[in-house]
Amino acid sequence: MSSLSVSASGAAADAIGQHVPTLVEDAVASKLFAQDATLWGPDAESESRIRLSWVGLPRSSRPLVGEIAALRDSFAEQGLDHVVLCGMGGSSLAPEVICATAGKPIVILDSSDPDYVRRALGDDLERTVVVVSSKSGSTVETDSQRRAYEGAFSDAGIDPASRIVIVTDPGSPLDKESREKGYRVVNADPNVGGRYSALTAFGLVPSGLAGVDVEALLDEAESVADLLAADDDANPGLRLGAAMGGTAPLRDKLVLVDDGSGIVGFADWAEQLIAESTGKNGTGVLPVVAGGDDDPEVRWPADDVTVARLVASDTDDDGPSGDAASEVRVGGALGAQLLLWEVATAVAGRLLGINPFDQPDVESAKKAARELLDQGTGSTEAPAATDGAIEIRALGGDGSWLGDAQTVATALDALFAQLDRARGYVAVMAYLDRLADADLAQCRVSLGRRTERPVTFGWGPRFLHSTGQFHKGGPAVGVYLQVTATPKQDLSIPGREFTFGDFIASQAGGDAAVLADHGRPVLQLHLTDHDAGLVQLRKALSDSSPEGGRG
Image (tube, rainbow, N blue to C red; front, side, top):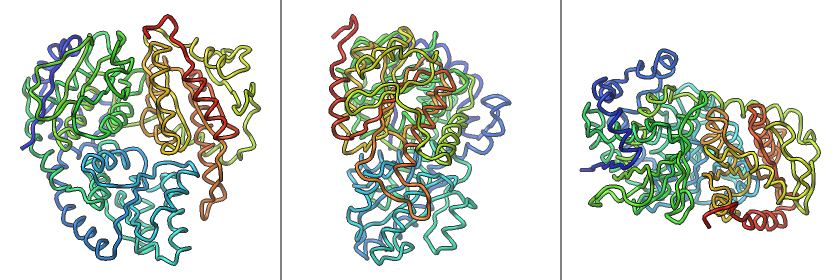
């Protein structure tokens, strides 16, 4: 039997006290679990009507358990135990946290970086099973990854149909093509959006093939479903949703910090769920994934921050502690928490007055990327300056914010001068190899100390399916640092005229162009030499000294 705990202090507790009684009176929880599409207003009704099946997944996904077990046993008999997942956004983030928490290895291929893709292709191909997950069946990243694996298997004399499992919505282009090719296909519930799909085939198939007990995960979720559906002041979904979206004035930065939860990487999954669901119409809640109590956003949280602590499910919770003026503590088993945070995000969407099930600004970046691919990579504008192995470009803002900056250090100064000191945030967007270049993410802490504002760090292109929506649809208070690099070695995509290097460059350029069109200031730093540029960039970011800061 699983349980959930949500306790709060400060502004978060005030929000719970203010909003939960009304949410109970309006029967929001029971209506949500009855799949009432009217909860978010008439403008959201058509989308909500086809996106609410997630509330019943702890029960409706049960038939998958036996199907996955049989498939896993079949592969095991052939000595196939190296599982790779090709997917983006909700299709990859849930299996990542599920497998990591269970201690089951899985390779998450959610990048277009040619060096990252090449390493995955060269890793234990003889023992590899590939799960290709795409709800729409037309995601270009996933299609490119699938083509790469089809080519690698064929070159090795292996029938791709014997190694590739497709997870997609029924009737999608990928569904039809894969069945014609003789691939194994598992259809997901079409009435569940990608970021709410953790307990659908998208979350369960790759996790189960990797060896996770997915039945136990469903048991954890089902054990709290009635609690989350209850119109009661103690409902943890209503309480967490109010703490997220009901503070007054709105504390629109939610700093997620693990405090002994035992769930590995949960904040990364929650980041995508919350940012893509709420960041639109000029409002939203920006999740900030912190590494621990010494991170500046936790150590001295700003006035627009609520700290969310992920605690152990069996902890005797004495309530929030520490210096945060707004804090919430959340405990529970993984399956239970997946459903909890989905409910809370839907509730926060109601309080914010937005539709938590659409993502209007994600497609704009995809469209811009396609246009750049059509134009070719040679269309990139000349840099404003070049400093060593780094080209400097500036977009957006007032068009002249870079000034006469000629070095990376002075360009960073110019970018941070655009920062709203009361409500702003810094977004670092690195289109690099997130495994080989992982230590670059440490710059988040030094930049937080320097600017005394929340800092997010996202690996491109995966963040485009997460905080990318918030960047464009949320409040116009961010400044954006984009890092790209010339790949060490490019990689062709079978059947395509463009390479992985072309593709990731177009994704970065397209996103920067859309941000600029929205008036957001974007500093583009392109590493012409990957290794030398990265050394130079790390130094520039770590040399950042606090501006009147708190150390």
